[in-house]
Image (cartoon, one colour):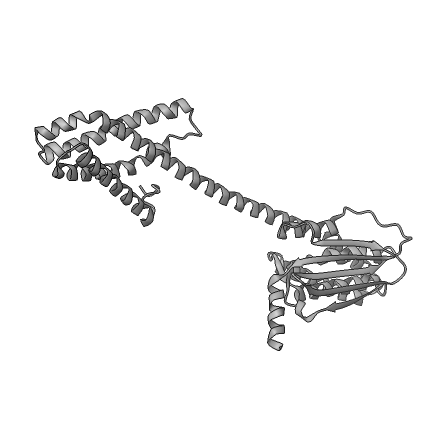
Length: 364
């Protein structure tokens, strides 16, 4: 009985009682005013009929539940329901008769009236069965579609999380391998630098492991790890690049996707620092711009050098992750002109923007 939608909560039960009361009222009006049955018999039969109908309405949930439209042929479904409707209608009429005649003792006049209206009673029983079972089918279909939508949503979320994790795992391997190779070489050339590099790499990996399960992180925390990453690369490349930041103070607490900046800097090292003999200047700018946190990284590059071929993991990784998280494909802008390469990320950041406006109003 617990799976019956009518009995699941008080509201649905109230609807059943209202439905039964409405039927009782309509039945009384037809019996007393339409068919000229006595007042006493009309009131009692309407009440008994409505009570029996109430019980049958609860039971009729099971034919709708077990006679599946999707799993059975139309002929089988119609045949099963016709048989059930005939049996139910007959049972309804029989129970009314038992209550009215043997139990309550209505005599020959009522019995003659009852027999004279058997056909109409039977047809009404069939009609009520059809209406109630149709209602149950609609409720069942709606519930299943809601459950299906929830499951599909959960599945999409699981797939999205799996894709995001897969993209995260693509970020660091080649950097780690390069660092290990550099450390291997430094152990013989400059053991002190090798030791420094090992410590910084350990801190870098510790941060990754500590924040791996987070979807988002504060910009200030991400920048700490970026600086650590650049310190490691400085040991490898020494003075081949300089790094500067222009960060608005409102940006520090803004949240961005975890490890979203890492591929940006790896891309610069791979395609600019590694490829040129000139010094590369990296500049990171960040400010709140309308509804977005605008993160802009630019660097100079040697236009005459041939770019290294790669798997395209870096920038595509960022684009794919932003698309998965925010369901938008216009949150990254890449420009390459006159020896300057730049990437701009637009991170939706409404909460931080509201905090900035509130802070500005408080100062006024």
